[in-house]
Image (cartoon, rainbow, N blue to C red; front, top):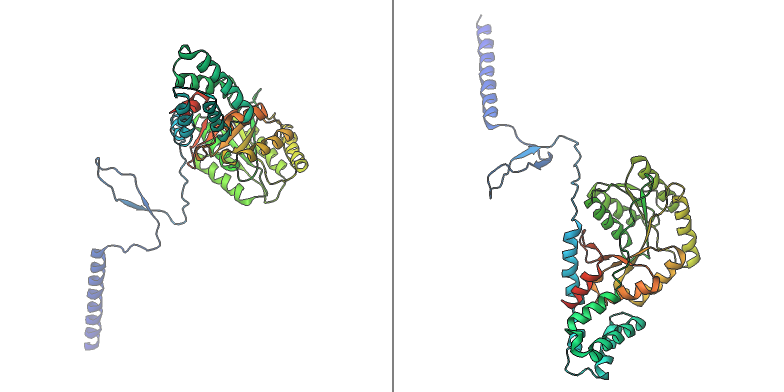
Length: 375
């Protein structure tokens, strides 16, 4: 009997201890795991206050990429004027300073020619511009008007404002518009494709990107990142695969999904004209089995000057270039390349790159360009 009493007392004591231990842990609350992902919830507090509420992410949950909303054309044009005024303003100031002299003698006109040629305007366009300025300012005298207004009119005419600078990004009969983007590696070709995609997305167009520069894995990955940021499909193949097959799949995807536009990034690695012609020719032929190519954009680095013109000649002989994209124009004081490359190829500059930001690509405007030159 005594033995049963002792055992019962021991069991009762153990039960009391367990109840006390559980009560203590319940008061302290759960201990968070150090491996749990934490996602900050949107603030729901008043203005100026910060909400620090957090929720636990479910184990194994993938982070959903945030799709960006690119800038529309109007804000890009504002930045076009600002950036060009900073980089090209020296050209306009030099010309205005010379034209504002009391006496426009031969030395002054020679200085004006030197300024224009140094800015990569080209010899023939420079001579044409100087001749028109001489006629209006020296022959007509005060009847010609303010030197700045005269210079503006003649520069706008030199940049040829009547050229059609619209991007042909729409197809016919329900087919998508197909834009081939060509140029040497290093000119900013892949980045330009991504930035054009942002312009089209801002205009509420559906886009498919074709990563046909298959010999550069970095270019394919870069284009995939651009596509992810604005929520567009990117068609890619294994490294070193046939660029034409990737381009074909990109267009087929666009046809199947009823996308508005396909942008195809092509390889620029080839060093001889025959090889370049063969590859770009094959890409274009394969694409046109499904839809016509509506635009061929040549990307040129504005800072390369005469080298850029040499590249332009080669590509114009290889493929039917319909428009030019000048990158890094804000980093060059030689904005005259706009005039020279248009004269060289007979096609318009349609887009200009103004910096490294994702929306630093703007439609080219002759008037805005000249206004930026003249401040």
